[in-house]
Amino acid sequence: MKFIYTLILVLFAQLCFSQQMPKELKGIDDEIIQLMEEYNTVGLSVAVVKDGKNLYVKGFGYRDLKQQLPVTENTLFHTASMTKAFTGSLLGILESKNQLSLKDKPAMYVPNLQFYNDKMNNLITIEDLLSHRSGIGTQGVSLELFPDNAKLNTVQRLRYLKPEAEIKNSWDYSNMGYTLAGTIVEQVTGKSWDINIENRIFKPLKMNNSCTTIEKMKLSNNYALGYGMYKERSQIVPYQNYYAFGPAGVIKSSVKDLSNWMITWLNKGMFDGTQVLPKNYIYEASRPQNIKYDEEYTKDSFLFSEGFGWRIRSWNGHYRLRHGGNTNGFSSVTELFPFENLGIVVLCNQSNSIIPYIISDMISRKLLHLSAEENYPVDVSDMYKPGEDKPFNKDMMPTFPLHKFEGIYKADGFGTIQIIEKEGRLLAIFPTYTFKLEHLNFNNFHLKGMKDFKESFNPEFTVKFDIDTKGDIDILKLYAQKEPIVFNKKQMSPNQQ
Image (cartoon, rainbow, N blue to C red; front, side):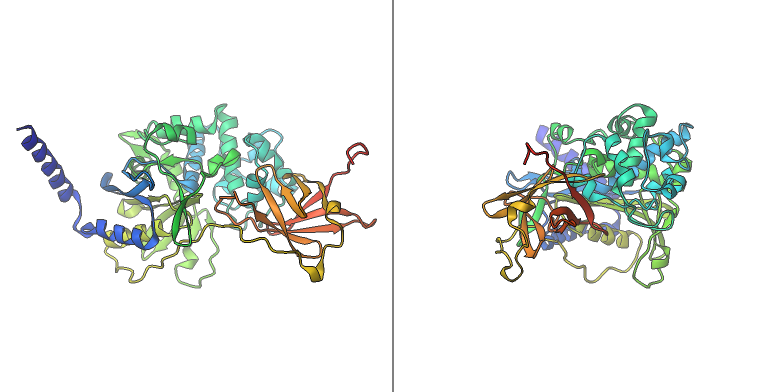
């Protein structure tokens, strides 16, 4: 009898789900599995919400390939830059409580904050940070190669960091801008950004499995390992350490939790009868705040724009909000169609993959009754792997013996690089990584990962050494941004030489 009763319950649940599943999504499981095979995707999860309800929530593949642990709707993935909409929402909440205005200047709330020039000091507002029109730029070298765990220390570097785009009149993606936005939250509330996210968003939205740290994620017992592709094989990659720039990308969540997040945005900030996110902020964040330049000369390209933590576009006649995320081992995307009350989120544990976008596009087309895309590109970038060491360029050898390059080089706003000679090669020691310097020509080299380097980014930036009027090496130029970063050689005292 117990077996029959259980079987009846299972059949009843399947019947309810089949009744809820719209005819447009029949067969979607098989299509997703086929795409995963084409992309060599280890694990993936999908959620679709419509009219305030979960339409489809499911996990596929494995969160741990070796242990064959399956992905479920509650598996935690790294959402990366999808975090930005959460950070913006915190500021919207504070504005609704009259604790700040998005039109305020950041220096009103952050002590000892100065930008690179007076124009930036006079013009940049909080809403510029959220819409990527501050001109600050992402400043990835400062954030990742010279990291600091303290947000306040990190944003106080901005006085030394040149803007990467025109102030107030450009679109230039900025993780540093969102780091500053998160710092403002901390300074206004007196509590960490993480606690604010937990108390003001996760708890009221019943996002009970979501978290902001790897330590908390691992307590869940249902989290995904990250993978990268190399020569058509999946390899585990380390989780990214976000240091101070967590407000730009550190949230770990599941599609089940993110369903509540999407429902809230589609319901003008309301969840379970409570106004969790301010209605006015939802309106401001969902409308164009900055025009995004696009090189494609198409009718839609003139409508690309940025809200607060969302990309906005007129897509096949439908108003769409979207933001993706990409970090070591993970790719993700959320799409909202406010006028159709439709939301889609796709999370996967694969670096540099467009499969989340492909699946969200496929589901969008089905539910909006658009023609199917005939051929999706299969595009997963290989992980960076350092190749075999190349010999020195004998026709254009360095103009100094290698020990003359040794020393500590410093740049304000970044930090120090130590150059040492070891076994006939130069090494560049950063705070977080040690790289080889592979010779190009004369006094020019490029950084090269050591054998244990497993990050997903390619570090092979050019390094050029310049000499002073005395003929000595005194400058290291790192070509890792739009303009080279100048590191000056620190003078050694006699007892250090």
